[in-house]
Image 1 (cartoon, rainbow, N blue to C red):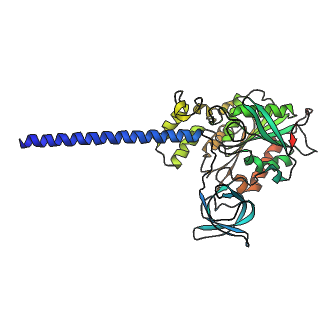
Image 2 (image 1 turned 90 degrees about the vertical axis):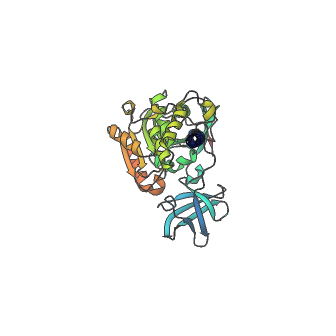
Image 3 (image 1 turned 180 degrees about the vertical axis):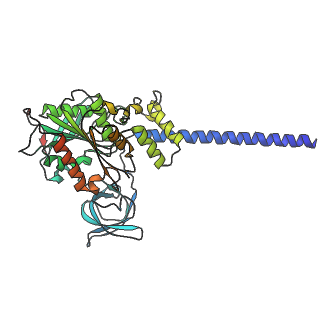
Length: 409
């Protein structure tokens, strides 16, 4: 009887344990599904509000300084944009003046708008917010795409330059045309007309029906349209420059687009060369279990996942591995990438440069983080681009067509 009672109690304990265990398994599975879905949706959903991951400790308006909590971004040499107050205020900040007590003090070059106050902030590679800030002639244009008119800025080449040489800049994930304003001067001084394009779902161009990024797999159509516009307005030698995800857009454009005979070179800054490598890297940085990261990638690629992710069509991430597709590339290419990028690993850039050393020139940086290479070392960044352009993109010889029909700012 006692033995029977023990067995009965033991059986009840096993039953209870099994029930609790099953509950834990289900709870874990549910949590995994939530994390997986959130990761997948985050990757393809355009950003409208940037994280305020820095802290302003104080301003000294008389001394012209700002003190921030010491972080890798806040402590980096160079000049940057500083946003605070939920992006209601913006200032340009310059070199480091002092470090200590977990803080860094930097030069406050000028407040563009907003009130000085301590609190949450973010540091940006954007240094210029408006095209007029460059002091160069600039025009607005509308690029006809299959979704409607996509706005662009056009900086004409100098009067004494070959009007047939153009560069089309393609911004990155969560960014806008403002990202490329830093690069305009080096192209202008090298004799290029510079077109800063917008593309679907970036907040400037028309939205797609699903309002989701295609990670290059849909945006390339808008850059193909920008190429057509440039050719119609005199371009005979076109360089495509892609920043971050814009690099993936450019690579999709040159392998999927039509009418590309006038594209003569590519410049990539902190580019996504391989989306799977990039997303796995980001998952590790965020300490997301590998199994959940892989599940999120499968979700992005799945035919059936639209109701979950909101995307209108699956994304073929494997077709976006341009190390594997290196043999398909033929245009001269300049890649600038920092080995401490922290968002897009430089491994893809290095692997592509090794696989195609015949056409790829890699200029590595360190300390510069993601898309802040110009901000960190403008002289090195500018000389690398100017030198590469002079060597690989000679002046066009064919006669140019009419100037762009655009509205001067």
